[in-house]
Image (cartoon, rainbow, N blue to C red; front, side, top):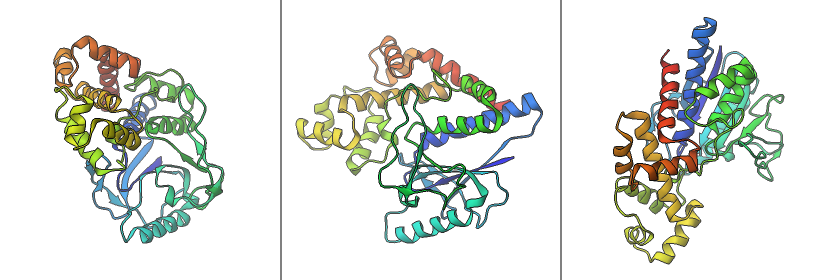
Length: 324
């Protein structure tokens, strides 16, 4: 039995957490069905305080406090978010570093999304390879090894937003073999171009911590007005800026043009409706602001390499595997 500890810090990325949980849930279901095992992965959601943890999109998850000391040598740790930037921030960072050092022998694999302040200086930081491309370079100036928080044989992995699913599958492949992980990957609600790779999706801005609070507020407003004509001028009016100033401000804050940001928010809303409802595709297209069902289909093929119908079918398959 492997224990998987999720350490959720303020501003963690909810989408990556959800996708990783789905992978481990599907793995447990497959192990029960094919190998007669009760479960292979015991997932624990934790935070530094043991209270609710707030994601970057404003959703709070209930967590338990980190145990003072881990038991056994088969624990995996995934950290997402950033330490508290307030007055207690430095104290919290120090305590978490002490916890990592105290439990380093029990952690067989460690990964982090954000929370760079927790990492000791280290020269070699392993990055998860993206589908169809080279692994992104590790952060410069990180210093020596990260063994203060994890076994030297494994080290840390620093991943990017959208790579949580990759990470979970790669960990399972190390435990159960590539064939088992490939079987899980085929059941997940996303295209599988090659083993454990994530599709080349543009990031979803609403899931990312905003540099400026106005961006987060704007994204929430857009999410409730998707059926309107969301031109750059209309968005600029909402944040009380000129069109030109707003376009520069938005791209500087998110890395996307305003038009591309709206497209991603429409796509994210459509994906959620496909996952959680039985609404007809035409109705979903209308609610998400697509001009027609065909326009939505082209958006899915462009960004996800699959049609909305295929996306719904794959997600239903994954849910069925998790419930088995």
